[in-house]
Image 1 (cartoon, chains in turn blue, red):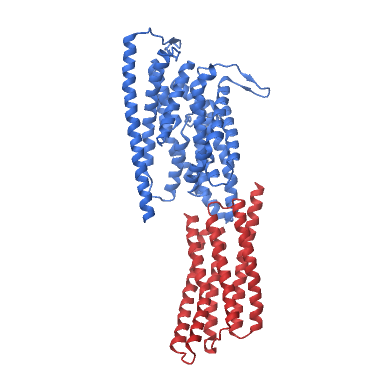
Image 2 (cartoon, helix red, strand yellow; image 1 turned 90 degrees about the horizontal axis):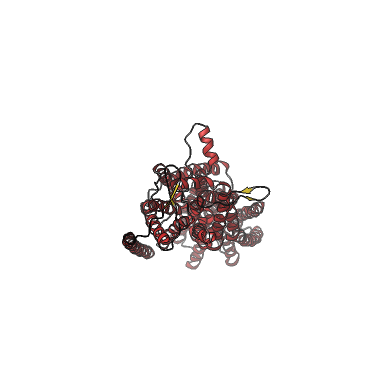
Length: 408
Length: 216
């Protein structure tokens, strides 16, 4: 039964692996610098390592936002996030698992009557913006450095490219580690408060309850990478590499650094010791950091033609994704609780004691929820068709642009 | 990782060898045509044989470089451009060989009054091709210097055109003592000598675009 409840999280992990691994190894695979098989094995291994070793930090912050304290609630919250991600991916809209899970947790808070910690929410939302910005800054600095080294050293282009090839593998491994460390919170974070497993002693080291969950989540991400990321890597990868090989390396490194910074508790402690403010340990969207890094390089090169539509779509995603996930989570929780009679969590009272949300089965109240559900379903359907229409229009516009380009 | 570097280094050696080969071919072409115009047919035959060998080596190297670049995924982003550039350089070598063979087969009779200016034409055309090679080498190590190096290619190409125009004009306007068939033959031979600089210019255009791609 426990495994059944975990399936929604595992599905989320699988889709994360299938989509986000391309941000890490897409450039290397897309340009045929490394075979997909080798990239998938390296990425899977390092994602699992990152998740188990360093996954606790970002997961803790999500726990502060909403401590989902029943397994049924964790299942529903993760499922709502997964459906949101799936739906938006189908509509080709930029979506982040992070934003979906945050919205779904807030949905749980609203349903169970728990207070959403404003400071934690502010911290999380701030990183959605600061992540891509930091990615852009890192990308500019690293790009400047690498260009300078290339120019000053007078290194042969072929040797330089062979170093880049090696660099892409190393940086890809680091990126996979950071992805696991940072994004495991999206996959398994909501299950941590609801689960309590015995420590697993493996002789040399032992795995805590959370780490065992992270290992499972890591394996789900790895399964996503191994089974479904090939096509994404080959298509997205060629898009990234079209910059230049050194820019591709810089973009992956910048993204890995940002994800690492937002998930490293030791780095955060180090800054506190140095009298600097603590880094919030928050899951950030790797795809959005990649976009930030690419824009950073574009700005450095003096490109004036930044596609503000993409930026606009990302910013829209910051609002629409959590809202959709939140609404979906709220109503899913209602059905799971009232139709399937599954415990979805408790309201944490001020004294720290938990009070189960188990109101009597009231028909008028059920009707109220049904009406609300119908309204919500209606809104979601309208939004869905609106986005579908928008997608069709944008596809039509793109094909027309391509046509005129060929004609010219 | 050392395997990557070993393959890369081998390809670099082959590219350098290929460029050296073209360099040598241009040198032999310059001397070969000069000896033909001066009437030293023995030296011309020796140079012709040498060009033949160099062209065969260039072809082999070209194939090997292309194969290695694809097999070991060397320069995946710039591979197409580099392969195209090597093809353009090989075209120069082919042009040299075919020009010298034209001289050998058709034995054009060059009037003594045109001897000096024909040597100048040949020198200028060979210079254009020769100046392309440092720019090709620079592409791999210092791409930001490529464009300034290419200026000389464009200069010599334009000089070649001017010299060729002067010779053709002289043949058709001033040299009434030679018949039209011979005039047409001379024009054809001039065109062959001129072609080397045109091929160098085509290579320069490609290289210039390639360098821009690397710089931006």
